[in-house]
Each structure stands twice: as C-alpha cells, then as structure tokens.
Amino acid sequence: MATNLTGTVALVTGASSGIGAATARQLAEQKASVVLVARRKDRLDDLAAEIEKAGGTALVLEADITDRAQAEAAVQQAVEHFGRLDILVNNAGLMLLGPVVGADVEEWERMIAINLQGLLYTTRAALPHLLKAAENGPRRVADIVNISSIAGRVAWSGYGVYNLTKFGVNGFTESLRQEVTQRHVRVGVLEPGGVDTELGSHNRPEIQGAMINPFYETTEVLSPDDIADGVAYMVTRPRHASVGELWIMPTDQA
Ligand code: NDP
Image 1 (tube, helix red, strand yellow):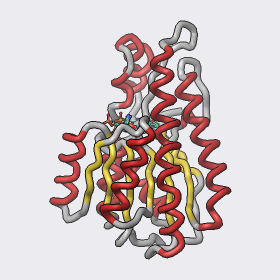
Image 2 (cartoon, protein in one colour):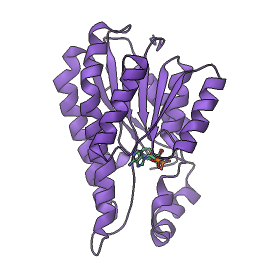
Image 3 (cartoon, protein in one colour):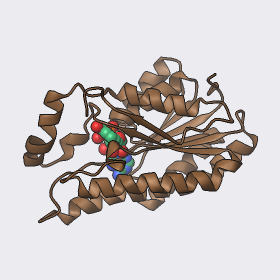
Image 4 (cartoon, helix red, strand yellow):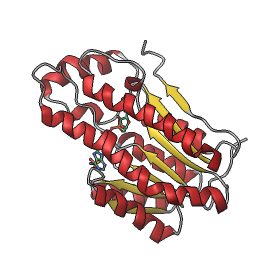
C-alpha cells in the first residue's frame, strides 16, 4: 500500500524540463510541497504557477548546482522556507556523446560537474535534514532518488564519459544506501532508457545526426511521466520497504 506525501517536502534538481518537471508535478499531486531547482528561472516560475493552480505548493530556487555554494544554498533555503526536507530527487544531468579519441575535454568536464559533483554537493547538504525527517517526520522515513540511466548498467562505444558518470552514480547510490538505510533514509537509483526530453539536444549537430536522431526516429520512447511514475512509486512505499533500483525501458528498446 502506498503512503501519503502530505506534510512532506521534496526537492527536485533539474525541475525546469523533462523528467525533473514531470517528477515535481507528480510529487505535488501526491501532496508533497515541492522545491524546484535549476538555472532557467522562467521555466521554474511557469511550473510553480501550474502546480499552485492545481492546488499544490511550490518554491522556485534558481541555482547552478555544479557550484557547491549554490547547491548548499538551495538546500538551506528549502529548509528555511518549509522547515524540513523529506525527499531529494537528484535528477539534473547532461549527456554529451562522442568518441574519446579527439574528444572535447570541456564536454567531459561539464558532464562530470553536473552528473557527479552536483549530485554529490546536493546530497551532502541534504543528508542531515533527511536523517532528521527520518527520525521525527510524519512518515519517519526519508528518500533520495538518484536518476541514473541504462547507461549506468551497460556501456556503449561513444558513451564513454556519460557511462562513467552514470556507473559512478550507481556505485555511490548503493554505498550510501548501505550507510544510512538503518537510519531509515532510503537511497535508490532509477535507470531510464530513452525518454522524450531535451537531453539529446545539447549535443553537437553531427552527434545528434549520427547518434541521437536515428534512435528517436525509430523507437517509441518513454515520456517524462513514465519516469515520474517510477519516482512516485519509490517514495511512496511503506516505511519498511526500500526500492534500491528501478530500471524502466521503452518496450521498443532492446
Ligand atoms: P533535460 O535536458 O530535459 O533536463 C535536464 C535538467 O537538468 C534541466 O532541468 C536542466 O535545467 C538541469 N540542469 C542541467 N545543468 C544544471 C545545473 N548546472 N544546475 C542545475 N540544473 C541543471 O533532460 P532529462 O529530463 O532527460 O534529464 C534528466 C535526467 O535523466 C538526467 O540525469 C539524465 O542523464 C537522465 N536520463 C535521461 C534519459 C533520456 O533519455 N532523456 C535516459 C536516462 C537517463 P537548467 O538548464 O534550467 O539548469
């Protein structure tokens, strides 16, 4: 049986588009107050207005979480505003594909900065508040959901540093799960296959043409809501049940 999110606060990174926006909407529908974090404030403002129009509660925090001070400030402001934090969804991410031979090192650095460092900074800042919520919050349990990828399970040529970051997220998630699970902070990873979002659009045109468009043109991919459903499932389990890993694929994707 699912538990209710009434009285809880959920912070979602990368809430300005795709999976993050859909997740924030769904958690708000489940009665969590949601904290929307990303760099594009106009997008976050629109989403907050939509959530509030539907009867939910949302706080917009513009932050570049690759900057440790901004990641920490976002968590701090969320807790100052709502007085607590129960759920963290580490969703913000970047996928820049291409061969390692002759790669643009700046692209690697941008992926490592958001997919790994941003996730680490936000997690570290949130943990004391999550541990407190697990101790004396309404549910007496708290959650971290890390959005990894099928690329955290399987490596492919041309995905090198994206694979590196998502394999890293999976390893870190399981280590942290073991560290805090007996204090009732559940830590799990959600690994989507192809989802219809802006993720591929950040690649150079030649990479989009060779590696991204052919896949999206021939595959019935997932919608962001399919992944948001998974996050909602993970964070609404009864206190004694922890989903450590959830792998969601388009049926069409082998
Ligand atoms: P989008 O590109 O639509 O969303 C990425 C989000 O990350 C945006 O909201 C963006 O907001 C945010 N973001 C990027 N950099 C930063 C930053 N420095 N600080 C704060 N926020 C940042 O892609 P998706 O929704 O697809 O991606 C979400 C997650 O899902 C990623 O971790 C991705 O790796 C993963 N994933 C996606 C799959 C897919 O097929 N789409 C498959 C498997 C996993 P802004 O630019 O406003 O800062």
